Amino acid sequence: MSEPSVDFETLFAAAARAQPRAYAPYSRFKVGAAILADDGVVYSGCNVENAAYPSGSCAEQGAISAMIAGGAGRIAAILVLGEGEALVTPCGACRQRIREFATPETPVAIAGPGGVRQMFSLAELLPASFGPDNLRR
Ligand code: THU
Image 1: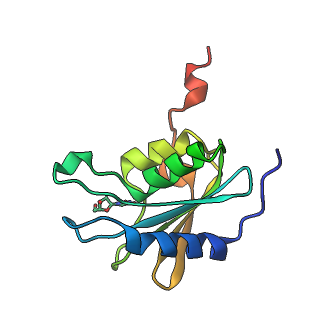
Image 2: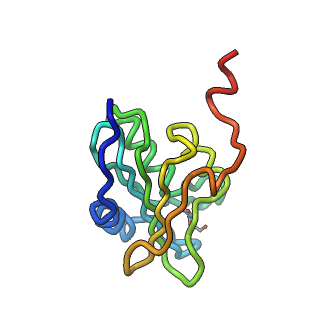
């Protein structure tokens, strides 16, 4: 399947719909994420916290689950939306989760309330990564 062309405004709009629905009563830090998948569909997610703190999940994780449940298998682009001065880049575990379904060149857009603030490739966020190919011997 050829890569769908990426419309970051559409990804931003999807993340902006998910972000206010985040369940973040502990951190009060709501995050939305949106994935353009290889099937051309946009899948979104938000963070869902838990009273047992480590059981919470990130927005990126939710978007990946939605993508897999929706029947797609590859991330063509992902956008993460959060607030605050510092860029809301994916946590280390989510960089690895994205890696599973992406390539080093996959764009990772970091957005704030006003739109995209900075673009990264996955390789910039997770250099020299370990992935599915490592297990193909
Ligand atoms: N969080 C995300 O959902 N994605 C990120 O990229 C950064 C952090 C969430 C996890 C937790 O619910 C809250 O933000 C504070 O860390």
